Length: 181
Image 1 (cartoon, rainbow, N blue to C red):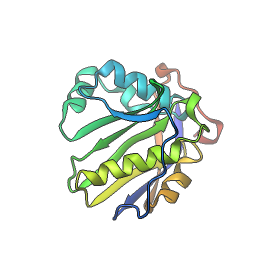
Image 2 (cartoon, rainbow, N blue to C red):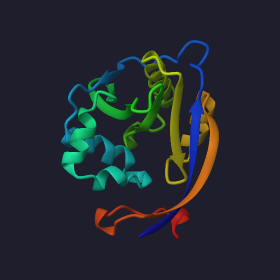
Image 3 (spheres, rainbow, N blue to C red):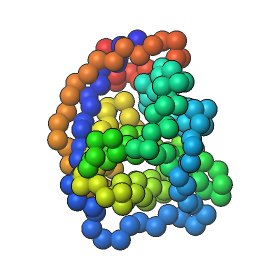
């Protein structure tokens, strides 16, 4: 199935000023040491399922395992009372830039008041590594509040690119009507 999407590439050249928004009581962010392919796929598929996240679904296990084993890649999970609520992935392969490769909340956590504090945690974690620049991209297949959230957090758009995705129908993902090619 073909999807018409617009990808927006964003960057942040300086850490945000002012105090970070505090996570609600009982909510913590934990770095996943030695993230397994199975755990990663569960996070990725749960967060990205409603938004046509498909690239990592088709990545062979051995390639995903090698990616997760890189020292430049880290996976961080949002937990509320020990239950997973979302995740983000940082990649410093393009040092001194750190890319926020994936960021999102699980469907049950959307609208629960954790997103902006969680995003700030991701940004602060990237800059804490010593990054000079943070990058992220989002697209019209993502949650409609993704781009506004990145802009509010201090990212600025650097370019937009129209793309046509050939999403394998074998994945069983639903095609949002606004993306149909």
